[in-house]
Length: 88
Image (cartoon, rainbow, N blue to C red; front, side):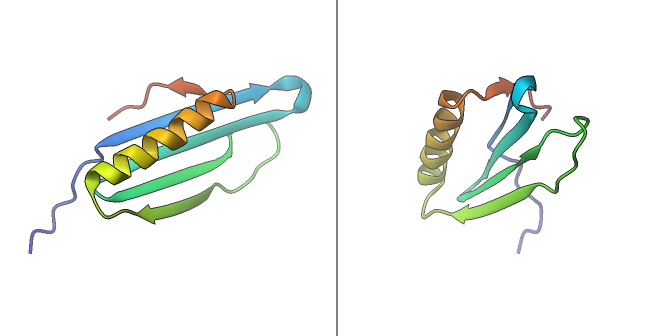
């Protein structure tokens, strides 16, 4: 058995900020093979603290995971999240 971790094949992070609503949120999507990990919460450094939440979803194929992640990302961009560069 090969125990080396596969690098993520897709990693995306978006943030949305609204000072007048005191809303500073992030959303991350990571794809590793057939696994899609979504993580979200409040951006650190804006006062109120909260713990990030996450969901892990498994798909039948790598391609299905990529498609699902792309759909999630497009929805988040449509809701005002600005994509950020993510260091590999």
